[in-house]
Structures are given as C-alpha cells and as structure tokens.
Image (cartoon, rainbow, N blue to C red; front, top):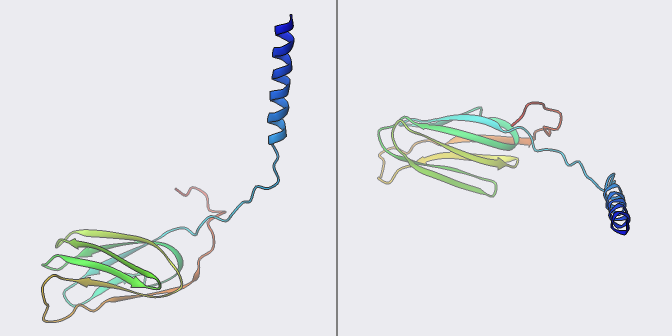
Length: 140
C-alpha cells in the first residue's frame, strides 16, 4: 500500500503544478500584421506598370509578367529595400514578397544587353501602415 500512497501523492503534486502554470497574466496579445496585398505588374518594351500603385505600408506580393522579347531582371528599390529577381524569361512571371515601410519605391526591369531606349520604371507610393488583421476571419 506504500507504493499506492506515493503514486497518489506524486499525482497530486503533478496536478498542483499543472494548475499553478495556468492563467498566467503575462500573455501579450500582439496585433497580427496587416493582410498581405497582391499587386500585379507588366514589363513592356517602354515601361513597367504595377497596379495598384498606391497602398498602405505592410506586407505585399508583386507578381510581374515579362511581356518583352528578352529576359529581364526585376528590381524593387526604395526605403532600405533592394530586392532583385530574375532574369525572367519572355512571357514568364516572377514574384517579389516584402514588407514595405512608408515611402516611394521603384520597380525596374533591367537587361544584360544595352538597350536603345530605357524601360521607364513603375513607382509605388506606400502610405501609412494598414490596420492589423486581428479581427479578420479565414486568413491563411
């Protein structure tokens, strides 16, 4: 019967420790980041376009299609950000995912060979931070 009493006593101690660990008031419910915004872009022979070109700060995903006849390197550059992908083959796409702070950013398309005419970059205007996604249901 001594083993049974020790087992019961150790179970009681374990249960007490488990209950003592519950209800910790130090838990902070930090806000979730804003919902990512999907942007689309196109590289043409004369310019790069991205839509929408004005959004609030936070996570973004830009999918860009190369509609030219040559491979292109895509560069996103702005406030403390320089992100390059590629080269992206003609008629292919590439995606850049970043969290952007407020400011102005350029999306450029470069080439390994010299071009007669430079491709004009797209300009993104990033405003104040978007609201947190705490109360948004069914998010990934």
